[in-house]
Image 1 (cartoon, rainbow, N blue to C red):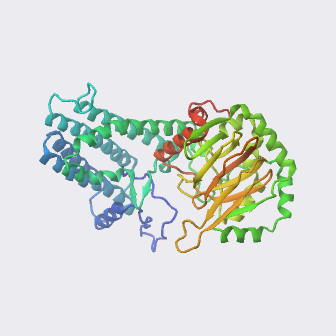
Image 2 (image 1 turned 90 degrees about the vertical axis):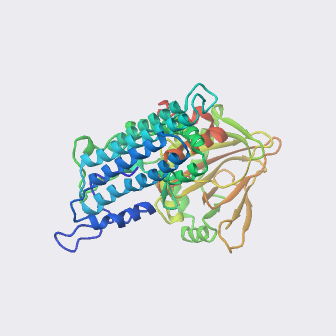
Image 3 (image 1 turned 60 degrees about the horizontal axis):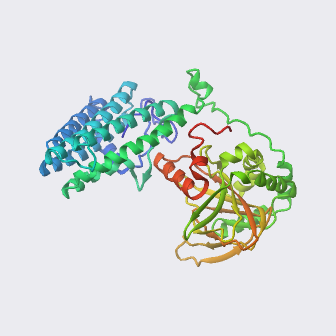
Length: 499
């Protein structure tokens, strides 16, 4: 869905060469948007407006829906071609608005409404066409006609459009940014529709849409609830836009009582040498002694306090053990949350990483968590701490309790072609530190032996806290199944988290 922004963004805009020259907006990342901008640039100084292109997209989209609704192989292929044309034209109005400055709130709404109307009719038309090709038959083993499946998908899409528009009004355009891969967005899968119809897969596409669209609508509902709960800045709530010349200062961090202890511990560390080691080891470093006893002892007490809340998981061939998510720690062990946000600790980690680090979003159950190895055989197999965030995610492991023979085994440079792999293994006793880029370190925890116990603490920091709705769903499902259970993962979404 290409929308026309209400204002042309200022960051990254080249300065005008004269009083009348228009700023040149940044080059779009999507390939189709780049082509659209090249095509509409000659229209900048003409009478053609973005609304004209939106109307053309609407007409082609209606023709596309009509073609699909006729049924038959030939009409389905015609509809698919019209769909590609309509989807591409949808990018032209936004690009013309950006390069010409012909923006308006009415045009923005017209574009959104046209997108929603065309997409709903598209799915409805596909359903009608499939029903016309096989009258009296059900597309799925349920008493639902193909036409009903199409309109079901269409209604779900309409709900998605409406909620995304409300989210954008609340938190801005960044709140509805789609996932991008290789210069393509999620919606660009529609460019593949001619392949679907060419191989007579319209019926299968309809079934997939009837299942997938309502599921995605549920994810957008979760995003909508989250956005509505987010407090609006004071300037916006009063109807005043913050000035670019006077940016709003971020809120001050709350003082942490153990910061002085951490600062003293850092005084004994050659941070510059440690940073060089971190970089030479492909974003990995280990310190056997880091946290002072004044910090470690409260962590041990916190781990014992939340033991009744441990959720155990067993994934054959990969993982066995227990864990407690940040949501439970917020309620029963707030010391962990305070340590996670320690200014001294974060400054130290930023020096190692060489870039600004941010806390993971509040709805991420993995932001800080305790992991319990308490039964013989508890372990986790080889894996990466795969990040679904837009930026990088760094993992900090802190030893809490270690009365075991368990080791953290790791492999360095596994994703650096031409660089020899380096294998290693360490134990991290209470107060020890391991810090690494989660997407680079291949690692595992070896199995726990008889009459042994091991508890570790994990902190996750990110460089960009944004994550798409689908990626958030996958991440939450993984955390629910493999770590914390559905109750701990989704309790905040249900409004039960106190912190």
